[in-house]
Image 1 (cartoon, one colour):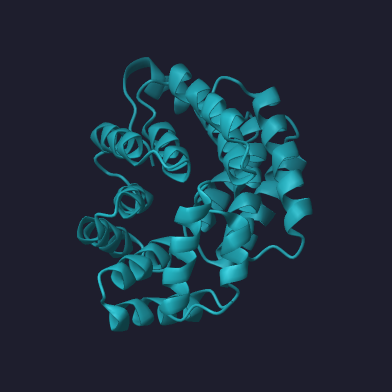
Image 2 (cartoon, rainbow, N blue to C red):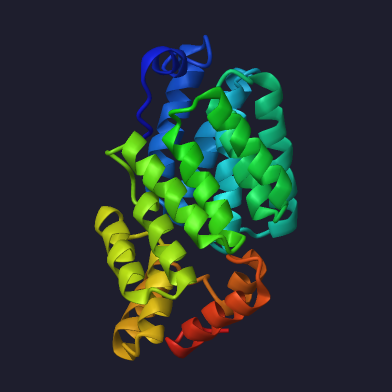
Length: 270
């Protein structure tokens, strides 16, 4: 996913477990997770659980497992959301404890802190990842997302552009990050452009469509917004305004209300 160079590339490509079967299961989990659907996420969790069962010292598998739980919570799929977030924190901390040589374990812990709205811990932990690997594009991408949630749109834009330069083969979440930052700035036409780029790279992801719908509402393009919400509901029928209010895409209450009100206007159920 990320593009690294020199000694960091050699270090990060070193297999993080000596057990071939555990590593194979980890890779299968990574592939499943990329699908971004509820079923894909459940499959990834199973692969990571099995990898940890075979090699209980496999730090990166703990971190990856934590990320699937956080992702499930953010999409409204978790049957026990509070317990899952607590379990994710436990797993992510264990991953860092077991392997502090890889930035991905710090990334997983930072991502977990972010979703728990532990902002200072999230920023500090992801900063450790990019300090460990200064060319780690996904680290700058996550720093961008955290800054976006904190209302720092310009910082987020600068960080994601840096990530894109480091990894020209970036995934859908990079233009999504840009789109949501421009939404935050009120530059909705630019937001639409980047959010559509994100969906061109992965059409089944939820949040680019939600931000696209909200941007369309702000631009007065109600029918386009309603179409996007229809697509969201087809792919993720569990999503609702009340869940999004809990998941909190923005720390600022006024920005969050504006976002939710736009989605309600586009037809997202409460």
